[in-house]
Amino acid sequence: DTGVSQNPRHKITKRGQNVTFRCDPISEHNRLYWYRQTLGQGPEFLTYFQNEAQLEKSRLLSDRFSAERPKGSFSTLEIQRTEQGDSAMYLCASSPPIVVRQETQYFGPGTRLLVL
Amino acid sequence: AQSVAQPEDQVNVAEGNPLTVKCTYSVSGNPYLFWYVQYPNRGLQFLLKYITGDNLVKGSYGFEAEFNKSQTSFHLKKPSALVSDSALYFCAVRDSTGRRALTFGSGTRLQVQP
Image 1 (tube, chains in turn yellow, brown):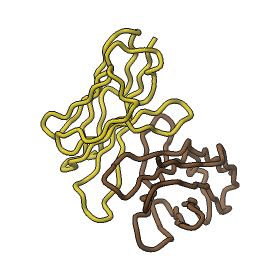
Image 2 (image 1 turned 90 degrees about the horizontal axis):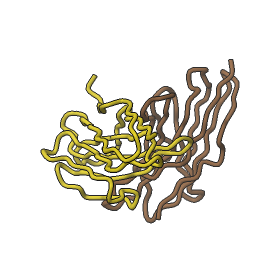
Image 3 (image 1 turned 60 degrees about the vertical axis):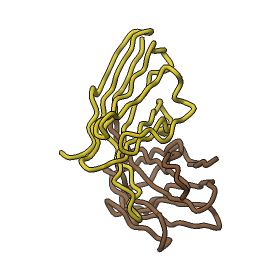
Image 4 (image 1 turned 90 degrees about the vertical axis):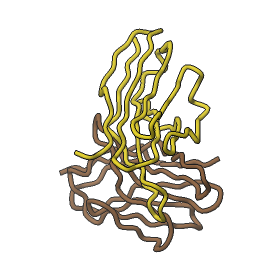
């Protein structure tokens, strides 16, 4: 399967612990996105990378959240000092280089985080 | 600020009947519009998009959507529903400027009864 992959698929942690999620985009996709989805809601944008540059950040991305894409390939999303409100599905998406009409973001299966 | 409204939390339709899932949007400038489908405990699967051109867009699994600029709508349609179409459907929008963030609606659950 050559789609977006995310690891782990599920994570249970205790409040106050740090967690890190990984996203591997579709090969040759230079744009990568993180979204958060809570139960009963649509996904909410967190951040966007073009190659290794983080170009957009949502106000949702508090100081406890940090995302990296050091070599322009895979990305990591770290949450420090987790809170129960961080419990959600974290979705990663990727899209190809800018070409007319090629605006589609392709999503991975997500990482479901539960903070106890 | 851009926004999406999906006014129906759930749509029920009998198998074989046509279905419509409604979406209206608000965005500065020209919109890029998308429909995604989500099955339980899965990520989002892309169905179709409108960027420019024909107002009627055809996508995967027999779905189509019509872009209506005057009504700022992008309703999802299918002529004949299948039980396997039962899922959660999301409409999303972004503007045509350099920002890449998608804004999603709250989703509509489609239930197709056999």
